[in-house]
Image 1: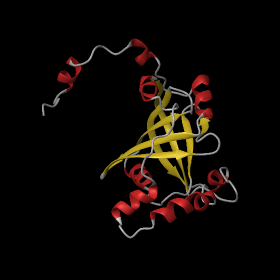
Image 2 (image 1 turned 60 degrees about the horizontal axis):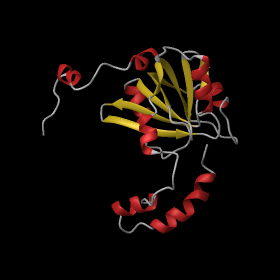
Image 3 (image 1 turned 30 degrees about the horizontal axis):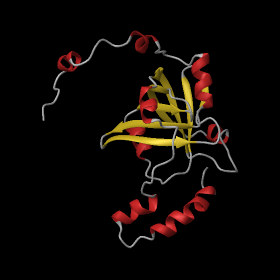
Length: 198
């Protein structure tokens, strides 16, 4: 396999960037980017650490992040599986990227920046839901933000058509642990998860 080994070689394979792909970048939250972010209930958080990279999906029943100011967004860390891969990475390397999606929309909005984990009681309490608090709040400082070209979601027809038949979570676990009750796990999970969203 022939591979690319230098930036110079890479740049010979592509044309100049489309001008709009550069002028769309902002270093702070603008009114229109605010409107998009506040409509997004889903974000993928990408981070990097000594063990490698991580991309973690996060969702909520309203805006997935709170905009604190034009340079800062706040992401409550709700109960999950406690692997805390993303959080471990942020503690050791503050670089993060966020990819916000809105169902039915073909654009994606990205934030690249740095993050810290806040544990202030008042901040955590400001996110309270059903008497539950996030263990931490990911505080992201915006370095740059921009919308991503719609072609990828359009090509994939991401929001159209019927969902394909794919393996379930229980089947994935059973593939690694043969005596696992995949059917019981899958049938019981929706009810189990309801009480653990926050």
